[in-house]
Image 1: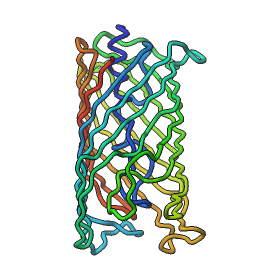
Image 2: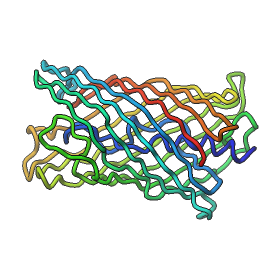
Image 3: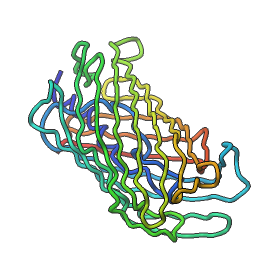
Image 4: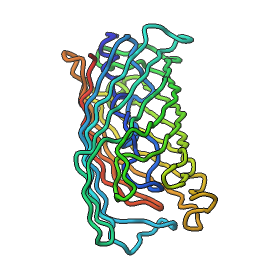
Length: 317
């Protein structure tokens, strides 16, 4: 297998490094923007820098309450996203695995929200999402073919990630790019690639688990409860293409508090499930890949529904 082809596929990691915290506290959690999807357990084996640029958009038009039923209020919003991510793969191994650090710099060029007739526009720098340290290792299976750039068999990744509150925070805004809180996010991913079949060069199954812990917002004394987030993707490698379905499920396992008081008397625990297509195309001559992803939320609790699309260009630098 050609090492550079393998690295191109692993660049999908860089597309996930963005804060999921777009708006006011209690509505969003600390996972990557749009969730993770294909190839999440892989890191490039070659040392060096890898980068990505992402354009995306998100819209909502309904609000759902504690019973996961639609509330009788208007809750419309549109958000534009621009992101640049940089990843560095270290020139040494740990227990036979690859080690990397990455960071994402996100800007919201346009946000508009209309909640119960109150309309607001905003823009600004979002909080910094970073994989402080991630470790990936291929545990078993044969090497791939020139058309299938990832190793067959099982690959695992362990990581510690954070969201650092450098974004522009304005508690008076319906949508504030920054959250004024830290998120501490231990996470793990597993990717398994089958051998070639009549469907293509191999079917990839990827599952990621994030545990989101938010610090207290000192400006409002608001504390969000911990959230567990499962992301998944099932996709097929067909030459330089990778096509599949991706989704996520997240649920809050602790109550929100303002000081010692439980928010809304029920803890305001959020929940969401979303699904949609993902398609990627590798460009070996450029040491790059392009990926498009769309997700639609099919269930939500104490948050609005979402339509999300993301277009990513990732490249070895």
